Image (cartoon, rainbow, N blue to C red; front, top):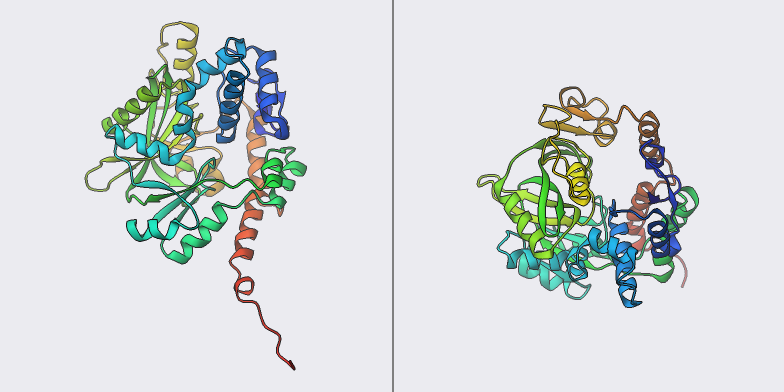
Length: 390
């Protein structure tokens, strides 16, 4: 694993070695780890890692190192470089999907000047999304022009200096320092809001072919635009077909996630998002062709797909630690399959401690909430004028 020093994953017994991650030299960190570990496959587990891996692969090609072992591993793990723009840009992905006759909402890159015109043409409610964001932090639903302007200002702003310093001091993660200092501005996309039920599918694919998939309908979320906390297993042919079309066109290999909206009456599936990384349900062993790690391991090793048994016969899954953190008294913790890694007690404790830390004053969530309160304060936009003699 390459990750920050305090990451909960370092507590698992399954981890062979943790390589140091330097937020100010991310590509060099990944290159050093790949050279030392000599892996058969590299799996990105968050959006920022995906971007860094794309940059590293492109850099190796530019330096004429396409024939090195590191470049070969990245090519096998990430797919062809021609797919990177669509994986990193929400708008390009939606354009690609529509060209493949996959249902997808109207989406466009917007600026401060073009936002109003786009909203007047497409109407409210709408969704603003920042490229490179995850976990719902870079997504905001807007219903008025004032909401849209405030949301755009927040989403297009460089990382908060206070948040970057907090991550560096408390989390030993310097990833945000460089973009904060350089005042890097994220790309913001506007998307027509699609009403319905949330669904997601996580897939393992190899050279443009889906080899295993888990598709679920979202029953509960931690927050409105946040990650799922309770899901139900489903089969949905349109979701499967849409995913296969995109995987085939982009020639993807590795683990990916696709988010859909199921329309209430027709149950038609509309693609709204894609995650070029392992998602929160990718680890679940739910039977043959529903066990993503087993399928990917088999195809990389040139072995036949294993016949695996599902970890539970229940179709409703409460994800740990999301549902426990969201509602400790939730009925789903007792009635659904609760995805707690009981065989890894140190990992369980680390996950609990991580969520407990989110309540502290220096947590990222608290800092973002504080920024929102300050930036929307009427005193900031309408300062009090002194009363007295001229």
